[in-house]
Amino acid sequence: VEQGNDRPFNRGWLVNVGYSIVKEQGYDYFCFHDVDMLPEDNSCDYSWVDKPTHLAARLSKFKYRLVYPEYIGGVTLINREHFEWINGFSNKYW
Image (tube, rainbow, N blue to C red; front, side, top):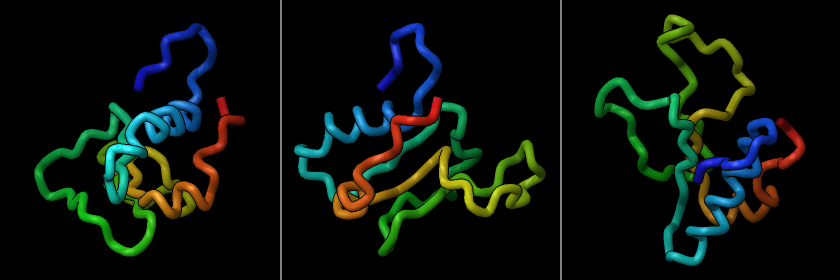
Protein backbone atom coordinates (compact mmCIF):
# COMPACT_ATOMS: atom_id res chain seq x y z
CA VAL A 1 0.00 0.00 0.00
CA GLU A 2 1.34 3.42 -0.88
CA GLN A 3 0.06 6.73 0.43
CA GLY A 4 -0.89 8.86 -2.54
CA ASN A 5 -2.08 12.12 -1.03
CA ASP A 6 -0.08 15.21 -0.06
CA ARG A 7 -0.58 14.74 3.70
CA PRO A 8 2.25 13.79 6.05
CA PHE A 9 3.26 10.11 6.04
CA ASN A 10 1.04 7.98 8.29
CA ARG A 11 2.48 4.47 8.72
CA GLY A 12 -0.30 3.27 11.03
CA TRP A 13 -2.99 4.19 8.53
CA LEU A 14 -1.11 2.42 5.72
CA VAL A 15 -0.69 -0.75 7.80
CA ASN A 16 -4.39 -0.72 8.70
CA VAL A 17 -5.41 -0.29 5.06
CA GLY A 18 -3.10 -3.13 4.03
CA TYR A 19 -4.57 -5.37 6.71
CA SER A 20 -8.14 -4.56 5.66
CA ILE A 21 -7.28 -5.54 2.07
CA VAL A 22 -5.76 -8.96 2.86
CA LYS A 23 -7.51 -10.06 6.08
CA GLU A 24 -10.18 -12.08 4.26
CA GLN A 25 -7.70 -13.99 2.09
CA GLY A 26 -7.12 -16.73 4.67
CA TYR A 27 -3.66 -15.84 5.96
CA ASP A 28 -2.70 -16.86 9.50
CA TYR A 29 -0.33 -13.95 10.12
CA PHE A 30 0.92 -10.82 8.43
CA CYS A 31 4.26 -9.12 7.89
CA PHE A 32 4.21 -5.33 7.78
CA HIS A 33 7.46 -4.36 6.12
CA ASP A 34 8.81 -0.85 5.57
CA VAL A 35 10.32 -0.46 2.11
CA ASP A 36 13.59 0.87 3.56
CA MET A 37 14.07 -2.12 5.89
CA LEU A 38 15.10 -4.78 3.40
CA PRO A 39 17.10 -7.74 4.75
CA GLU A 40 20.80 -7.85 3.88
CA ASP A 41 20.71 -11.61 3.22
CA ASN A 42 18.36 -14.61 3.37
CA SER A 43 18.82 -15.29 7.09
CA CYS A 44 15.69 -13.42 8.23
CA ASP A 45 13.13 -15.93 9.50
CA TYR A 46 9.58 -14.88 8.66
CA SER A 47 8.04 -17.91 10.42
CA TRP A 48 5.30 -17.25 12.96
CA VAL A 49 6.16 -17.91 16.58
CA ASP A 50 3.61 -17.37 19.34
CA LYS A 51 3.55 -13.59 19.63
CA PRO A 52 4.04 -10.45 17.54
CA THR A 53 7.69 -10.24 16.55
CA HIS A 54 9.92 -7.34 15.55
CA LEU A 55 12.31 -8.42 12.79
CA ALA A 56 14.29 -5.21 12.26
CA ALA A 57 15.67 -4.55 15.73
CA ARG A 58 19.34 -4.24 14.82
CA LEU A 59 20.20 -2.08 11.83
CA SER A 60 23.46 -1.55 9.99
CA LYS A 61 23.17 2.23 10.36
CA PHE A 62 23.32 1.72 14.16
CA LYS A 63 26.20 -0.79 13.93
CA TYR A 64 23.73 -3.61 14.67
CA ARG A 65 23.08 -2.40 18.21
CA LEU A 66 19.61 -2.32 19.72
CA VAL A 67 19.16 1.45 19.97
CA TYR A 68 15.48 1.62 20.91
CA PRO A 69 14.37 -1.47 22.92
CA GLU A 70 10.70 -0.42 22.82
CA TYR A 71 10.66 0.17 19.04
CA ILE A 72 8.58 -2.27 16.97
CA GLY A 73 8.38 -0.56 13.60
CA GLY A 74 10.14 -1.38 10.37
CA VAL A 75 9.30 -5.07 10.04
CA THR A 76 6.64 -6.65 12.24
CA LEU A 77 5.01 -10.09 12.21
CA ILE A 78 1.57 -10.23 13.79
CA ASN A 79 -1.36 -12.63 13.55
CA ARG A 80 -5.03 -11.79 13.00
CA GLU A 81 -5.99 -12.33 16.66
CA HIS A 82 -3.35 -9.91 17.98
CA PHE A 83 -4.00 -7.31 15.28
CA GLU A 84 -7.73 -7.32 16.04
CA TRP A 85 -7.08 -7.30 19.81
CA ILE A 86 -5.02 -4.08 19.57
CA ASN A 87 -7.52 -2.65 17.06
CA GLY A 88 -4.78 -2.15 14.47
CA PHE A 89 -2.08 0.49 14.52
CA SER A 90 -2.81 4.03 15.66
CA ASN A 91 -3.74 6.51 12.93
CA LYS A 92 -2.80 9.46 15.18
CA TYR A 93 0.95 9.57 14.45
CA TRP A 94 2.13 11.49 11.38
